[in-house]
Amino acid sequence: MYGKQTETAIAALSRLAEVWDGGRTRLSAGDIADQRGLPRAMVAKILSTLSQAGLVHGSPGPGGGYALSRDPKEISLRDAHELFERDDDSANCPFGGGVCGVGDPCAMHDRLRAMQGAVRQLLDETSLEIFRKAVQEDGLKPVARGVRSDAPRETYRAPHSRRPKV
Image (cartoon, rainbow, N blue to C red; front, side, top):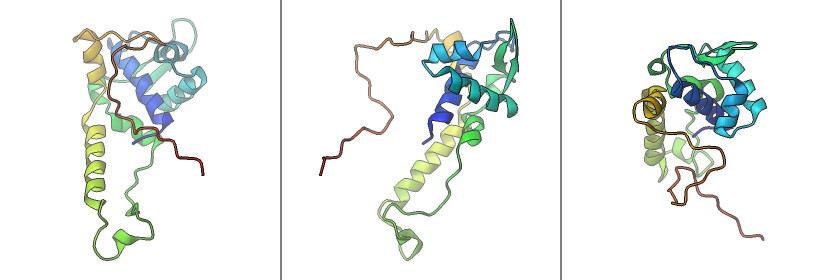
């Protein structure tokens, strides 16, 4: 779906959305990194890119930090995604060799197109408002770094598989 830079950008933006109060509250790159359990240097670099793109405002020095540049309702996940990812509209087929480009589509074609459409819809229709609302209205408390739940939860990530050594 997306890479580490996009994931970090969404993590940083979501943290800024959680504290959104019209832009008065500012968080440092270090605070965001520590609160999200991310590398400080990477968060600082990502915030610089987000600032250049106009998604956040940064202020140096004491009392400085970062805040969203506008209301979380006005910033979609697509805004972050398009900074770090390339839309792949290619007709490359998982079978390889251009099977989908010649004759009938491959056996996975329709499912892959549906998945791409669902991801696009998620990116376009999901704003940072969901993070602000979750914390400020619904009472969600971000979990401290390193704390793990005893209850297992199904992940959205692809399972890690180990190939047998040959």
